[in-house]
Image 1 (tube, rainbow, N blue to C red):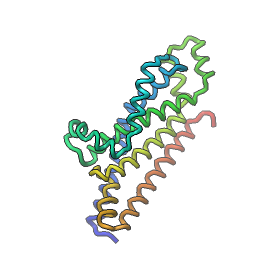
Image 2: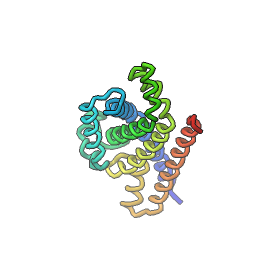
Image 3: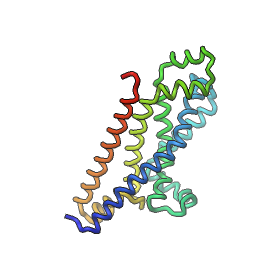
Image 4: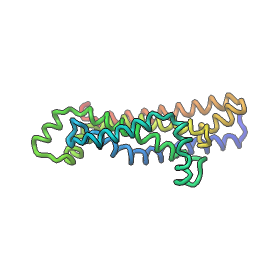
Length: 219
């Protein structure tokens, strides 16, 4: 159906997409997870209320999240060039994915932690637990299933972003779909790229959900 060279290119693009997704998700969580924790801790109803920090961080997160991904990628190209030395390819795409995903992850983490019943936190406070102890021994363990579901959502969202990065030379399956499927009018290649992306999303989502169910002590 396809030339051997094209099949090799698709295989390479597949692993580029996986590479971009995994690496950018890892670094996005290194930034987004602490941001989400700070949002919860410094909230007016948090265990360490600091309204000014909460509001400033919230505004920064909302500003970044409000910018469409492709526009964000174009806007931060000078920063990307400074960090990785190029504005095209998977390495450059990872920078954009990281910047776009970290605020999204922060909100996912915030939402998960806020699902923890206030009674559990109040019980820990009544026993003299410090804010850090409440965070590490109460909030994170209680929110673990929700955090894992959120991580599955984050990974699949970042994978979708990586496909869009193909429009501006980000590489991966998105680039194959655009360069061959759209620009050259080979719709069969575009459909195959879409199917591959759907399969990857379904697998990642199912793995995340299964891990969440197995760690949920309420079930």
